[in-house]
Image (cartoon, rainbow, N blue to C red; front, side, top):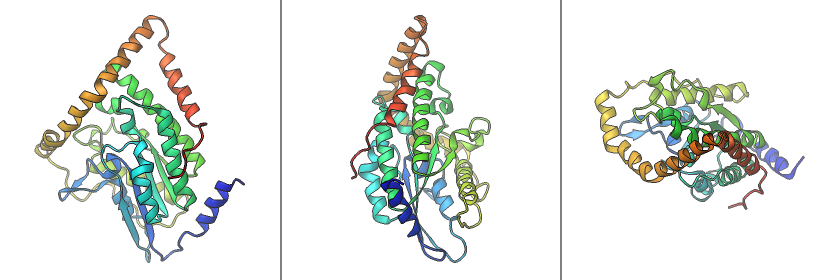
Length: 298
């Protein structure tokens, strides 16, 4: 048994028994912050929905959501991890990576290093981790194929890393990417990139199912759909006009030039009969990233 495994097992033995407080902390980006699930002027999101279903009778849950819109994996160890460790959570969600694929300077090696450092530190302090692979943003947004392909490649690389780190750190993993986002449009919000309130409830229920299957004591599962009626078309259009357009404008100056350059590079590769080269390079980079030395502890 490695020293890391020994520390993890000792920490697991110290987790509180039934009847004590369960501390649940969520790390991540806008998905976990709750974009798409607006309630009473604020955001709720799948993690908050799940938190209300984690405790069996006689036990309380203390939930803290540290996720924020636009967060990158490179920010986890600096901004979110120290605050999470100070809360001493027994359960921590680490769901992030989508924003990385939407940046011109995407670096799968750095993404892997930051995720590994964050998950390792939480795990050795006794926290059970929740992880997820994410859907391809280009597919959700229905971008033209030349622009969608680079995003899909990046998302596959991030998900490859997340799957490997899930095994490494004994996390509970949900295949969010495989949920029926395209087939059931009501699961997506007006921006087509984040879940709707019903989509957030679906994620919460699936995590609850996985925890129950693993034998964790839980409360009743989350509702299939939120009690609140979905926002009308006018509310959706107002949100897009006041908030969604800011995201589109930012990505037009950051992501779009890079995607256009990648699309041109792929077109040239196809003309040379080397269209699979970019996929092979990204797959190799993801595999290499998982063998890199771990970042120093914060």
